Amino acid sequence: MWIKISKDTFENADFKSLNYLYQILTWFPSSSDKPRYNILVNTETVEETENFQKLSQIEVSLKDFLDDEFSYFVTSSKSTLPNYKVSYSRDNDQFDIEEAIVFFNQPVSIVLENNKNDSQFILAIISHFGVINDVNNAIGHFKNGWLQFENAGGCSNIPNFVEAFLQKFEKLAERKQRQVADYFRGLIIIDSDKEFGTQTSKHLNLLKKLQDLGLDLSQIHILEKRMMENYLPKAVYVEIRRQSSINHQSNESIKNWLDAYLSLIDDFQFDYINIHKGNLLGNLNPPHPELINLWNISGANFSKLNVGFNFNGFDSYGNLKKENNFKDEFPNLFRKQIVNKQNLEHRDGKGELQEIANKINDLL
View 1 (cartoon, one colour):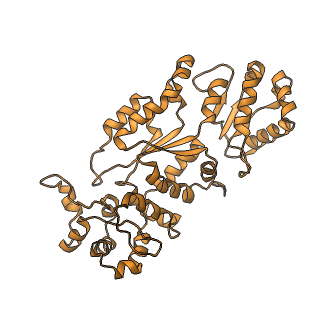
View 2 (cartoon, helix red, strand yellow):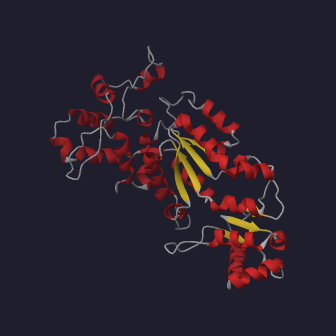
View 3 (cartoon, one colour):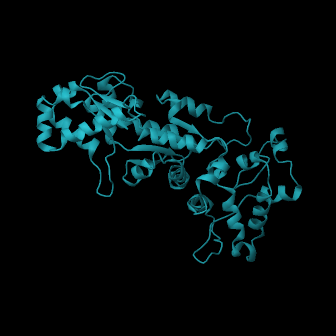
């Protein structure tokens, strides 16, 4: 991410604030090999200012560093405009130095319904789709604590979480006469909870509440498929089905569910099945015609899938766990070695996972 620091900031900002901002933008831990941000400063226009000279005494390589950054920005074919501007005077398209310190010092937040479980899915996305120019910035930012997962505590609680999250910026927004949501650095990712493809979104009211809080729709991503479980590649189920504990232990429900699931051929069935709970035709009586059409399969396979996938993971001996632990164990399947970009792309089918990775990278 490129941040331009304007000439008037060096001319007018108090040195303590400028120095603090510079440290925020350029610091990185010993385990990393590069700063969090790229800085755009034309040293020819600021090197005579008192602030630049004082900062040069602390950062002896300041001019060389900023000149290298400037040259890289100018010569990079992908560079057009900086992502953000810092100026002494606040404007709609730029931060003043106080705002910049608050905004750039906070981590990028990925808000999830359940960060303990859903984060494994997002980590799989950024691991396999986050590489740009042979570098995976998103993984590096996650390891450094610059990218973090927030727990909203369920879908319906997301507006409450966001409202509480934004409260820490209220006084700053009031002083700067800006919307408090302007300081939100994050992406909200929500299960669609759709039971079939043409179903009306279940989150229209939720989206309105978030927009009322000042968030833009670009900061919210509703999954195309029913939920994150529906993105797990088929190869993982094949591997589970081969486990000796599946074949030899007397758990017919899991074995039968896997057999029926692996026999499906319609992508929409994979996209909208409720993997854990089954209940294929939903709770309406009579069932919605779209569901009847979607699950027009053999009676035997319907019955097997309708009970749900009661999978609670394997213990250290490879035996099936018995305790009810699906929500904790299933997300770990995204970490299996067999999961890769190719089979995730195939299960995705629409380029959505790359879109999510791009949205996250744009925030870094």
